Length: 137
Image 1 (cartoon, one colour):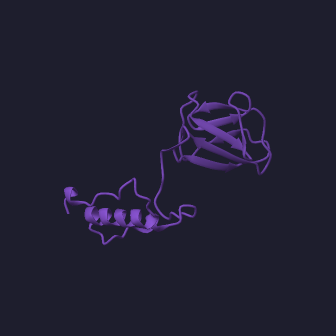
Image 2 (cartoon, one colour):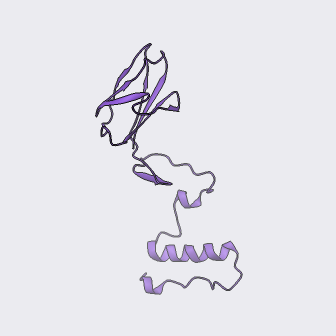
Image 3 (cartoon, one colour):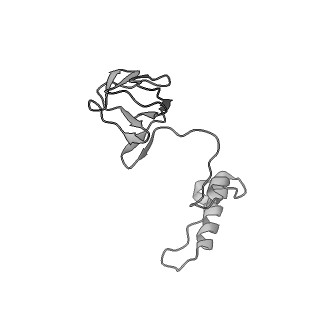
């Protein structure tokens, strides 16, 4: 069906229930997609309970924060100060990495230094079992 043959939306001035808008959307979707009004599983899910399986999401911007999808977790040994990343590199001095120990954000130059694009060196040794998270931003 050509786009010029699509039905017009319901009048805005008219008090409408959601069924009228849904029916209009289905008719438009069917005309464009020719898919018998099958909008797929995402469109039919409860907006407060969406379950996405498979695939990946990268480079998403949320409230000015870009999540690149590059993160790595390591478990410290007693007194360990040097951690070498194995899944990504970062730009030294460019504020391109977040470092957390047991969920607590660490501060560059205070708690650790960016030794090179794959190495973080802590100012003092960590405890055995501490979980260190590295997130590339």
